[in-house]
Length: 252
Image 1 (cartoon, rainbow, N blue to C red):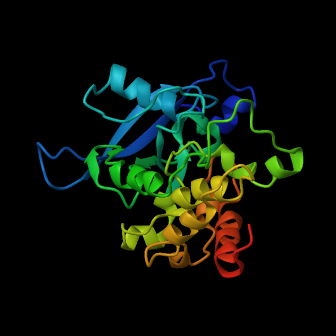
Image 2 (cartoon, rainbow, N blue to C red):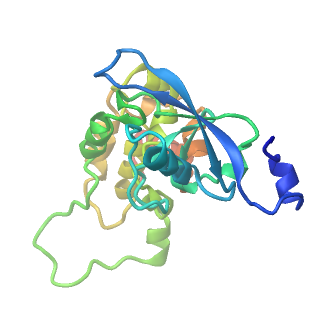
């Protein structure tokens, strides 16, 4: 018997909330082959569930060898960034009903980073760029005896870039990063921005010089892919432009 369509179920023609959805996953296992292949999985699932729920169902009930990262499952840890229907998203924040489950849903690893297995990539180059911009408060003098106070206005200056969860969705959506993995990438620049414009920090000039490198902020071509991909809604392109402006004017 044919499975009722999503539209019919939502219109009340069927009591069951479940649909049959096809997930087309790009599989790669270096122990088996040097080439990646696409594999289809058909599962019964409530369209109000998330792509992460579907991946769990496939791994637990169909093929235990399917490999992917996830941790908190609530859009905070950033572990489960992947390309879903050709767009970088967090699997734990993407509802199946929002990505047209009437057609096969494609799932693959994010681009620009070496795939280790299935949906898992080597994040070390990404985190090295993050470490290189010194993503921590740097001050001079003796340790203070009380909290470093900051006005609400000063805090607001870099509030947007504090939201980064290091999921790499922005960096792995960047065409420049795809073609040259030496580029710092949007996420590293965003985290540099967070401290460059922090009124309590005293290493802004040092970070700007790091980003003034040939693989730094000037490699950005302002395609807005990073802003579109950010699951936290950070205005990534705006932050990059503010860092460029600070490099030119030395005002921050």
